[in-house]
Image (cartoon, rainbow, N blue to C red; front, side, top):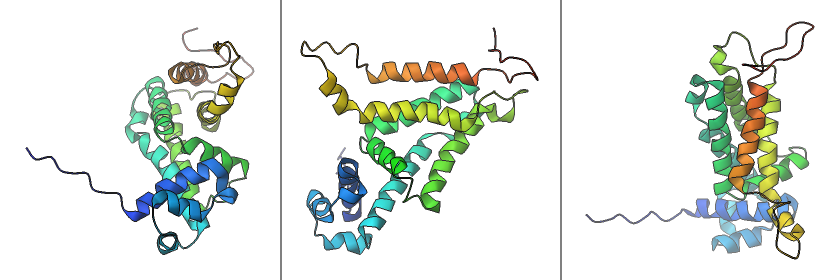
Length: 220
């Protein structure tokens, strides 16, 4: 059987990939279209042909970042138990962030700058992520009592540690002691995700507190 060769990336896709790396490394203000074009091995004029401006190119990178994360979370996850759905959400988001190392720094930079480039399309993709998590947390709205936790708090508790872990990789390397024993300052990615899962499930599986009462964990 004759194998088909992979279709070469279009000039637009090459520019998006190069821009993602540049924006991740230097932020929007520090990024240069000359470096993006050189990394993509294209003429700088191609940037303006496809995107018209550096700002438009950056917004397109943001759209791709957030849309990829939203697409990774299955709509069917809300049909599972909240526990299974949470695990799916964490592993899906973590997989995208690990496979695309530019996502974490771009996301963190955009949040630190107040979301200046989050127009309706980009914000809409983040709303998709939160909406799917909300359906998971509420168990597809089939549970008799909703969890005593806000979906946004759950998302921040999941995404925050993962983003910081990935973005801080160079910093942790610098903090390693001279003897090379970094056990106290570093863990592997899967171990981190296990901690995130445990903390998230501990919150999500709480029952809603009765009036004037304390919150109880299910099965306690």
